[in-house]
Amino acid sequence: MKLLSTYVLFAAIVLGFSCKQKKETEKKPEPVAVKVKGMEVEYASDSTSLKGYIAYDENKTEKRPGVLIVHEWWGHNDYVRERADMLAELGYTAIAIDMYGDGKQANHPDDAGKFAMSVMTNLPEAKARFNAAMNILKQQESVDTEKIAAIGYCFGGSVALTMANSGADLAAVAAFHSGVGLPIPPNKDLKARVLVCNGADDPFISPESITAFTTAMDSIGAKYEYISYPGVKHSFTSKEADANGEKFQLPLAYDAEADQKSWESLQQMLTEVF
Image 1: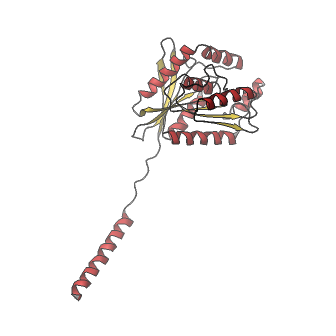
Image 2 (image 1 turned 30 degrees about the vertical axis):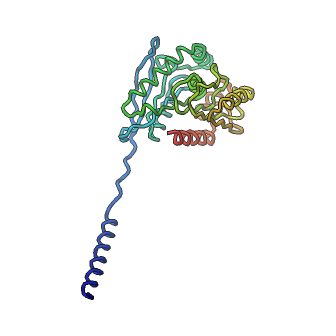
Image 3 (image 1 turned 120 degrees about the vertical axis):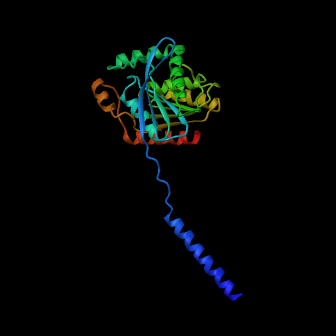
């Protein structure tokens, strides 16, 4: 009996040592590096040819949420494409969309204002262009068509909010340095969770419009967050803001801290929603 007990003890020690060795030699699989692929796409509404840019991590195999990004009033430019790349790095498939047609861009605020006004005063066409972009996003193999969000900057933020208020099938919407006096105010058709990040010193956004917006959101029980950054001006996420402000004598200014904090708030919302 004593010999048997000794044998069992020895076997247990050997087995335990072998398991420990195995665990020590086993290596965790290396995380797959992010490899962002960006590609230009052409699409169209019934009346307008449109040019967009899609970005995604081609090393990621599973389907993921899709995010539409609506440009500032300057038009579809490198800035909005950079944001698409940034979202792709986070694991989303993003499309920088075109609301003006043919990738048209403005070089002067007067032209930018005219382009933006032509979109916001023709909501049926605005919806058609937005929906055309959403459709091409949903056609991407990498996209989970049940998980779609939209974000926008300046004019683009107003577009994203307006589309959400019109009943667009969006799970989340974020607007940065965006007007909130919208052609379609918040109403029961709103399905999305909403984030608005604005500068407290932005003269383009009146206190009255903020009050009207938040009152309307509260009245329908919307899930939203309105963040106002003290001392921050318009266009605070764009590193071109200071140069444009000086060139055109406009109250624009980049703010690195507000830019970072607003991006972190976006990431938090998307993570919670998806």
